[in-house]
Length: 463
Image (cartoon, rainbow, N blue to C red):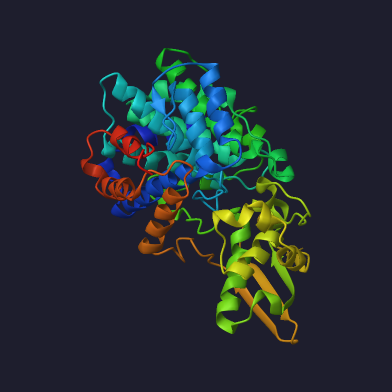
């Protein structure tokens, strides 16, 4: 039987699925990316406008439902969701589903943890099993919706599709029935936001749109739980998400793999704090540098041939003066910096590095050309052509970018990334708390109350 609107299929999937239905590899991936998000959320507290967002959120409403990670400021759950989701995306270091072009854990985890803390305050614990299943299903819904789209980005999909992920997670944790969950999706859709103009200009509003949708997801679930009803055909109606926010889509792709393909297993780690669309270029250049032993000073020129989406997202020109947000999405800058430093750290966007003459000069000798890839959502393959001052030429085509499921970070590298992010947080939690977080997430099935995870993300007075 064919549903009138695909949202009904997703509601049925979410309400019917238990953790026993989920394969071990999906549970393993959920643990990996929950921990990863905690780390990037802590380090993101040092990014642009994090303190200002927290201060404003406290000004807009007082409450002690939930806390801001690494800061400790108590806020109402919607406000805490906004701040924590923003911090997760603030360093462009959060995991992503490349085929969907969605940072599908970001809105989800910021929202879900805020609601879990609020439930704890009401005497209703959310367990580690609850969180695992909520995360897996949230990613499933957001990414199944997004991979079905066959047109390019018009709205900021990490925020818009992320709202569906967050509602899924909250609804599952709170055990919404089918009607309540459907209305929660509907109310979230009525508040959905996210413009690609912020990405085009490198505005800090980009990451805030993730936070806005996290806040709105909490509000939507509260309103649906209180009985508010919304329109039914929010995905495929004439003004539904797929027709209004996206464009053309393939219904067979949209629904054909539900319950068969677990999208959380397809997420990519981000080894570098820069737009994922820069990673193929950076990865290719670093592979060539490692294989052939040249230094950045020996490079005469570089040509990257990339799919149209990469050029659209990160093909912007390097500038004498760049904001952090602009530079993270400038492939020529991050590639030049990576070749000079054999990688990219969060310090790549310090004022001294952004204006470093050698990096600026090399960045201006990197050209990004568009290939004939017909897929408007493709991030691979990318082909790099590096010409050295000696006249030597080195080429590489990258299909599986470092951090993708087919070329993953090792578990040790994943933990190193997490520990490093904890260490650079503006209010460090300390090594003991970082290790305790690792241990708790690893044993998440046996955790009785996930607010214990937030306890471990509070600042350590001794550090």
